[in-house]
Image 1 (cartoon, protein in one colour):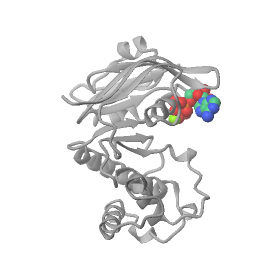
Image 2: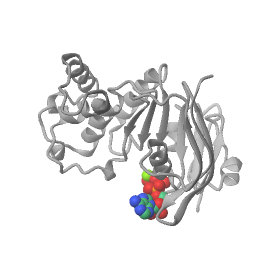
Image 3: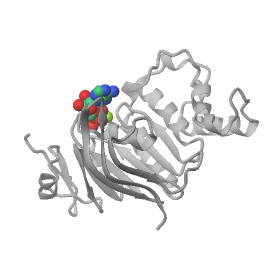
Image 4: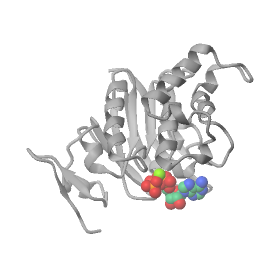
Length: 245
Ligand SMILES: Nc1ncnc2c1ncn2[C@@H]1O[C@H](COP(=O)(O)OP(=O)(O)OP(=O)(O)O)[C@@H](O)[C@H]1O
Ligand SMILES: [Mg+2]
């Protein structure tokens, strides 16, 4: 098992406000980790720490291989400034930004790869549109192309299924399963029922992180994890238990 990333006793937040306390997490090659937790629990903050966008107050974060294309990231769509006048094809190619020299040109093979991905995600016909003209689901697909174009070792997705329709959601998980053969995946979602049936392990983030080494999680475990959210349990037939909070 190759370890890609390790967080130890990590504290992080904004200004002097602590949002994440004492977080331990290990991500190995081929992991498929689902992150669940209530609004404001610190999921996006955790991803920002992993991405190096915010520095931890305390504790450590270690990458085993500080490679250029270590991480591909699909941000939570409501955090994207989509009024920025940039065409879809450029957004997709910008996922390779760290690979080309500043002001360098993209290679033809990069452009072909971008085209193939846009085709796979059903957004090729939108390639010359500005991202401001897209619907939420279209934007999400475009940013998914951007996140995976560099073939990262870790793919991080912050609520990739918020705006997408049921058809594409099913397709999304098929694509993620294929990608998981050669990259670790961390996915944040509020749709616990759906992610539990696709991921290999689950972490509940609510101020601190509780890791669960399986995709099966029951009500008692959620209680212990202080994770006040709806829950799905798997039996022969998956069923949802809606809890009042
Ligand atoms: N840039 C920021 N400056 C100050 N506080 C912030 C900032 N971003 C987030 N927070 C605060 O940190 C806490 C955790 O936010 P975060 O976005 O990590 O939650 P989340 O678990 O991703 O929630 P959601 O499910 O709504 O996406 C919230 O209380 C939020 O108000
Ligand atoms: Mg969030």
